[in-house]
Image 1 (tube, rainbow, N blue to C red):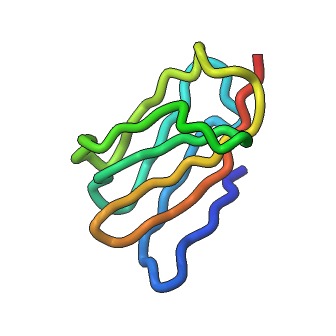
Image 2: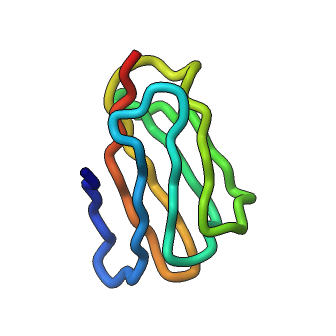
Image 3: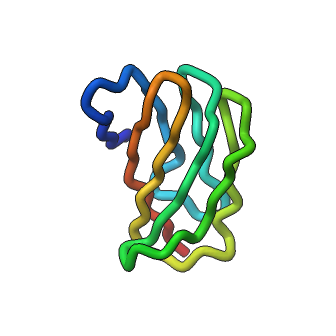
Length: 88
C-alpha cells in the first residue's frame, strides 16, 4: 500500500515501495526527482541525495535501523512526502 501526503498546491505524485522495506526502497515519481531526503522519527536526516535527475531512485536501507521514516521528494512539479517503514 502507498501512503502519501502531497503539499498544498503541489502537482507531484510519487510512490515508495516496498513498504515495509528490508534492504532497498524504490522511489518513483511522475517528474524528474531533484532531491530526496529521508528523516527518522527523531528528526535526523539519515539519507539525502540532491543530484537525482531521474524519475526513479533506489535507496539502500540495509544500514538504516528498523522503524518509521519520512521520505520527502522534490521535483519541478512540487514536493511530496511519504512514510516508509523499515523492518529487519
